Image (tube, rainbow, N blue to C red; front, side):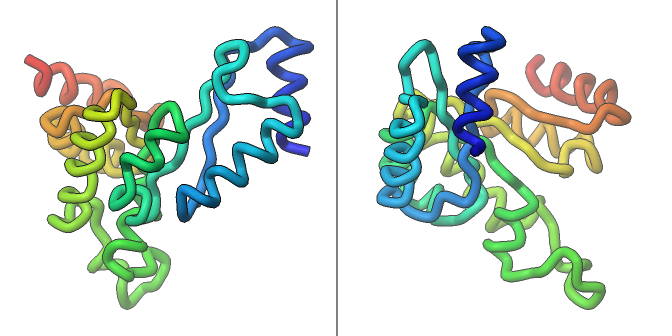
Length: 169
């Protein structure tokens, strides 16, 4: 159903700039199956400019970055899930929430590693998560790591843009 909806948006409404982002893709083999299902529904990566991205929200997406880069057009770091799965901390647990942080050295190491390896494979990396919105200084960390794009909440947009501009200077 989702494939048919994307195909309709692209083909009938002419919105060919719509890309597909695959969440929680655990292995390259699973990526192959997802791409095969999409193709069977008429959504072939690369055809008519169709880009297919993968969410990097599981440590395996980073550990096997080159294999994912061969199958997808780019990555989008899902920092909340990546943090939760890296640290083994449920962000919704009152007892564990204080230990949840996208600024943890282990999480930042994974983010830097993904950006470096994805770029080496010619793939862009975006960032999707609350960290830059909650702490605009976090955007500076992402810029220093070489991030290609950052999504932020509308109420924090100006503050984050200023941090990014300053970091890029």
